[in-house]
Length: 532
Image 1 (spheres, one colour):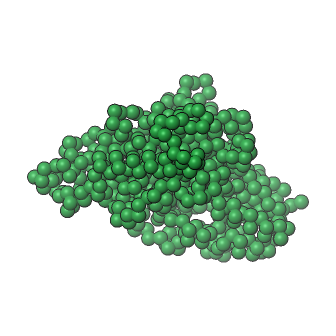
Image 2 (image 1 turned 120 degrees about the vertical axis):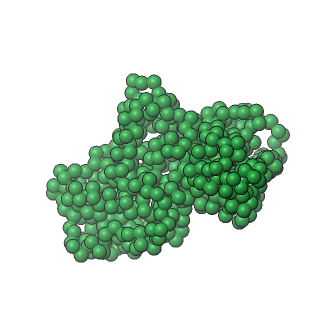
């Protein structure tokens, strides 16, 4: 039978390692690759102009790559449940293919689309290619529950064997007996939109550092994979959060949009590691991909994963609702230059180093401002190019010590942490140029500079740049006690009475992190004050 097929692009905006796209082309007379601009996303999620630009570029690149194999991309506007019945009839569709998506909204949407397809006698084929493994199979292998420690996750994955190898990108050969009907009138109806058409202001765009698209993703992957020594020696904790150019791969935005296949990345690394001494998970590049898998699995298996209430793995904390402090943090006006520089980089460029995310997340939540991680999650969802539902929720719970990581007494200092890798504050000077004339002695704590020095530097603290909105040394100690109380309340609720300080858990071992061992040992260099 010669099918008329729609392949529905969602996250997997690529031709390489796209088994669902290959399935659409098999025994097919006509194939229609589509992307749906679903109004649900801008209505229910925050999306910055920078991320819209990345998406538009990814769609343009996808269309260009489809043209090379005599196909085209149809960008369709509307709700999927309203769009598909029309397209099924208009194009006489017999098959629909797409990549499996595990997010809550996506699962509900896809179930409804499957129902509509059945009503129109359309075969539906879903393929796993957004993650290394089939997440449902991982959970099934762990007795129906998501692994909640990294070590347990590794054990489960070891029993499943290595991830599947990526499939080849389709070629002209795949399209030999298949065509994509395209009419000149379709350019206006189904063309890739501009920023203005999406209601975005180009004036709000930051510097164009990370162009979107599969071609750019594969080019960047190739550049990094040629650095075999760097790849083999890569350890995430040893990279710098405040380097002037990224000290990591910055491939995360390309993986978020599926411009780069995680399986392709995994197997390229495997080839490089073969026969060489190399770092291991959780700190290696393989380890970073496993963290992604870990949080994706938790996102599927833990109810209400992006919320505190109704989330069984999350400590229930009575966070404050200080809107002024939240606004100051979001806009980079806390009075702590290291924190404000990070938030400025995030707002303008759409990406910050993972350890920089640690610093600002700790500051917002348990470290200083005592504001809910859900508020921080919303800001990151808006501003990050790589904002990914499962990873965003999981990392915010981790960094606020609400789940997975439980050493709440380890607090990032908004002064000392940045000094470790940038004692002269070059990073601060780049993103907060009005502070560039402050000497290294005061660049992290400009409020301590004498008035005369502030005048010479052309920046009066409290006038041209804010004083600290909290005193870190005071509030961090108070917040440790608040977290201690929240943990005691949780322990009491689960056991009927609060555990005594230092008491082991029911399994006989002291409480471990999500890695199954001390997170401090793996990620954090200890110091005497237990501050980072």
